[in-house]
Length: 185
Image (cartoon, rainbow, N blue to C red; front, side, top):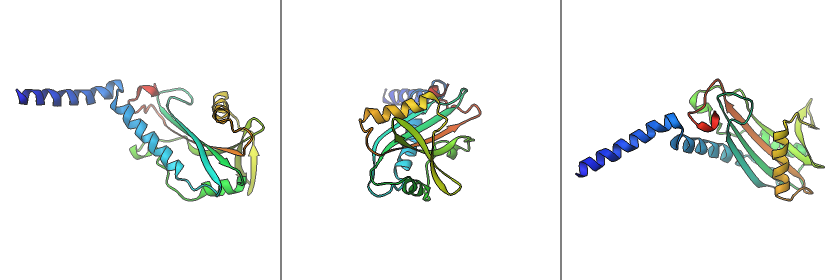
C-alpha cells in the first residue's frame, strides 16, 4: 500500500513537470520569475554615487515589446540623486559589474540588451547619455507605454519635485524562443 502511494506521488510529480513544459504552469513561470529577480538584484548591486538611493523598483516579464513569440524582461528603478550630477551617475553605471541577463546562460540570441538612464524633469523623461565625450540630455523616442510607465512610477511616489533618475534594464530572447511560458505568447 505504501509503495503504491509513493509510486502515485512520484508519477504525479513527473507528469506535472512534463505538463508544465506544455502548459507553462507553474514550474516554468516560477523559474522565469526567479531569473527576472536575479537580473533585478544584479542591477540593484550597481554602485550608485554618494547620496543616491533607490526609492522604488518594478519588473515585468512577458511579451512587452514588438510582436512575436519571444520573452522580454524590463526592470525599472526610481533613484533619488539629490546632490548627484548626470556625469556622476553615468560614471557609476559604467563601472565593471556583471549583470545576470536572464537568457544568455541558455545560449540564446539576445538582440536587445541594455541599461538606459533617464532623468525626470518638468514632467518629462530625458535620456542621459554621452555623445562626443559630453554628457547630454536627449528627449527619447518613446512609445507612449514606456513614458506612461515612467511617469506613473514617479507620480505614484509623489516625488516630482526631487531630482529623480530612472534606470531601466531591458533584455529579450528572440527568434521564437518563448521559454515555454504562456506570458510570452
